[in-house]
Image (cartoon, rainbow, N blue to C red; front, side, top):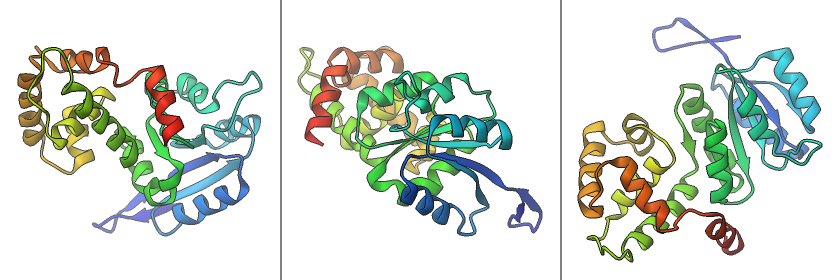
Length: 236
């Protein structure tokens, strides 16, 4: 299966497998992804063992996996797949909630994307394409949650830095998820130079030596932690 690009040359199809317990959601995903996007769902599974069989058989580029899909030992299937996958396979996680703790664990395990179920059908095509290209995709609603938490927290630090703008808080939230400057630029639709300018202002306002230090300040202040993620989940 191939689809021509703008030059008329054939491009290889992007092969996807889906691991999702709900049959209706699997059908909707297949319908959205097959709408002339050069993306093809080559297999679907409603249970863990079926997903692993599909990955071995079809060797897909992306595995779209629900956080509700669990292994027999109770561990999240998506994180297990990401942790053991070869570099060619990337995992895109579907989450029921805006769970910051789950996002952090997912990124550490190598998950390439985090999509909130409420906006799944609107975001899935863009998410799949960005993850396949090696970028990290995080749902806009999750970025907003991280941005607002950072903006609220950094203003209350003992060093009392000048308040971050909404865009600066958004950039810092993306830095905290591990994105490069280029990845942040792609995610926000701005230039890499603009990202660098935002980062320079963030470092000045937080009196941070570098981006890692800025993220450390944000973490130390507690805007992302198991406790706050549980609170966020209760209020979502």
